Image (cartoon, rainbow, N blue to C red; front, top):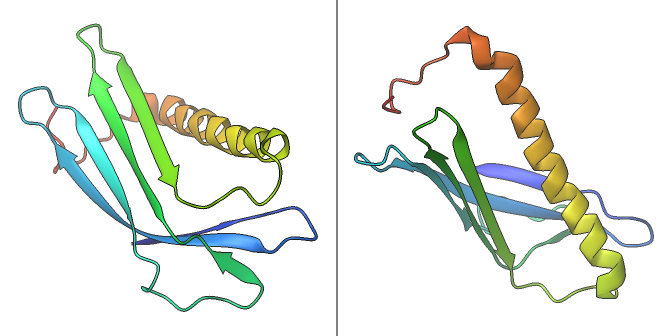
Length: 122
């Protein structure tokens, strides 16, 4: 399980999310998948923080024959926009791109360490 709190500009409350994350790997393609499922009742709601009522998502890390990988990230929330989309969409897009940039940076910094996870086949 994981807990995430999203910083939202004043005067609105921050938003949070509690999820259950499951890791799977396809034995043939070696694709690694992470399924993210909403579990809002897992921890109590905090004061001045709005809980996202519905969320689902996934990561897929697909190895290619040339040694590189394709990363597919999908999320869906059933929450109605709380501001006009022309304001909200850039904030969400920035967060998504920053997540991917940070992930790439983390992978590139550790690339030479030959880190192995015994539960993921090479």
